[in-house]
Image (tube, rainbow, N blue to C red):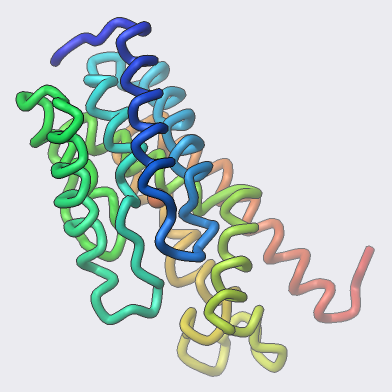
Length: 224
Ligand SMILES: [Fe+2]
């Protein structure tokens, strides 16, 4: 573990912000914008405060800011390779900033393994923290906003009005945003890597489950 003092961490954070702002955003997906990176870092700090005191915060900081430096749409055939491409891009950018070489591999591993679709197991505490922090963005009120935002961008439907819970059909989150709850979002708590992340995920998955229950009631005409 390498301990970085808070002032040095702040300096690096500002350098990462400047780098990303100079780079600009080459996609229209606002669910993966600069503010997403900042939220993931804040969540990662909460997880480390509770359950990751031994984590190298500079590694986590860099991985949070650069984990989505390459974004491919959800329906892109190469989507599962996005995190590997992001790690390669981050390596190039961080080397250019003279980021400590000894910590670079861990940053790249955390970036590669953060992705759900890549299926790469996070092997370091830092990678586990980053993966958990990023997954929190798919849960709670932010997750709810992001799932319907993303389905709108992809021109998908909100839900199947005839069979919203897919009782008589296969689940299909490529067609219906609500199906994504069952196919992925409500399963995220069991994939969390830290105790703090799991507790946070369970609470925020309940919020999504409550939203879905209310939606189903309203589809039956019950607005009480
Ligand atoms: Fe992300």
